[in-house]
Image (tube, rainbow, N blue to C red):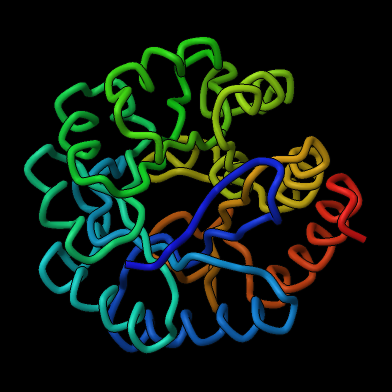
Length: 266
């Protein structure tokens, strides 16, 4: 496993990749694109992608390649690009299996209060990245952390809070409060999602990714989570809020400058 550490007062880290694992070729292509961009900008990064999007709006929506093939692909990326990898789990039974490959286990927002999933993930000793549920206040995150007090490798990801129907907002007061207690990751692309906004799928507005990420990074957080796709408008999921590689490159260059300024690394 890669040695990786997430701390709010350390250099900003990037968690990036497509929403789901579409195929081996596409995954390797995206890993190479992101690796080159992060190398050029001097950013440490983690590759992310989901083997199963188990919470799609419609039963007919594409869900991914499945756990067995998905983990093989993530393992290949990990070895070929010498990069840590992460993916999400959807049941307690998946934790041990997934931990054999990934460096970070991600808990989806809709499952952030599922005790059995959290307890099993904690047993693996891997870093755990919990996506804060859209229905959860930042004060309630302590209840999640208390479900595995012996595992110090815990971070929380801000990904927006429900604001009426089909809409999310980000409360920067919550980001500031959480970073007093845990490493905080800002999910720039899911925070601009419009859940269920397209009827049988979610919409989004990627125009707001940059201002939200800039605001969060200016607070001095540990990392940023960004979904990146070579052709977002044709992606099987989360297309409206994913970034193109060019937009990703421009954004992380700006975020690095903000992070260095805030943390006095210039």
